[in-house]
Length: 143
Image 1 (spheres, rainbow, N blue to C red):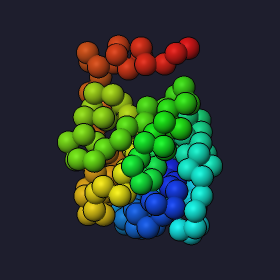
Image 2: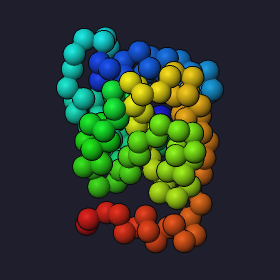
Image 3: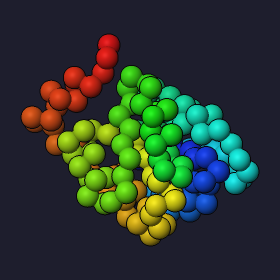
Image 4: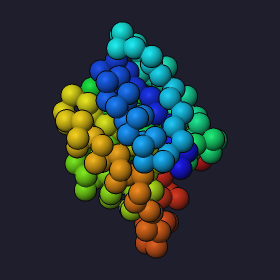
């Protein structure tokens, strides 16, 4: 699977670890940055990740910041994006199953890296259920 990933400074270490983890799982990963833990503005990385998923250059996206709120808000400005914040494994599964989420947002300051890995694996392997959820997902877009 082709996966886009990005973060801000608070999520940099998690991003670096998750890039390696995803590659070991056999995924093709496009890292949109940043390249260090120096302070940055999260929209500078969230927008390119969201754009790459929206254009189908990548199948899924992963964004990491301190609370995950900033990157989720930014990514969700894109019409074709359904970014979901997950701090528990079950939330990641439901975001894919019921909401067809295509960008996972991880709160690095609130979960440990092992849980972040588990959430990432769940998000990348869980399928959208469709059915009664499909009509709801169609209604999300404003256009």
